Image (cartoon, rainbow, N blue to C red; front, top):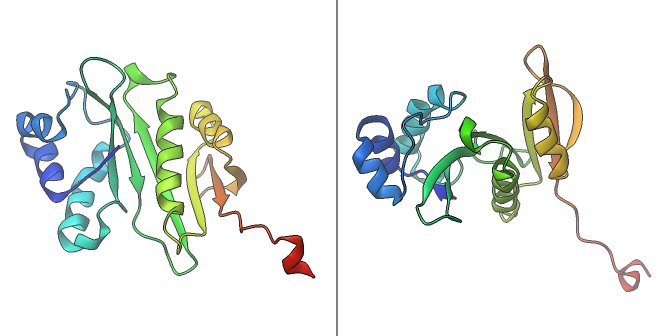
Length: 172
């Protein structure tokens, strides 16, 4: 996974050959994923205005297990942790790379990255109820359903930071 920078985001929106070179990967002609396309200008605007948000917005998933590196998906966060320590993730994989475990790997990587920051106490995600693939990814990565999402027909999932266990000596 590669965090989107201003330079990468600008190239993604306006200079495909440069985007390929900066990522050192082949970018498929059907890039970006349909569910991510509308957010790209917002990510760029947020990166320009908030340099400290690098990593808290968009990431690129590059398949490296084959001779040619290929951009296969994107994921990220809607910003840094809120006052309660919550971040929300999203992810999308190009259709030809779905059902290969890539979304699962992305969610694990994003969650581990977020939880490596001490201020993050919860990672949340929202998906459509009829998106069984996404619901399965979240369940397999230890997220639990916590009820209806913000949109009709959606469901919300969360993964809470597990507090360190208290040793018997500390309990005495």
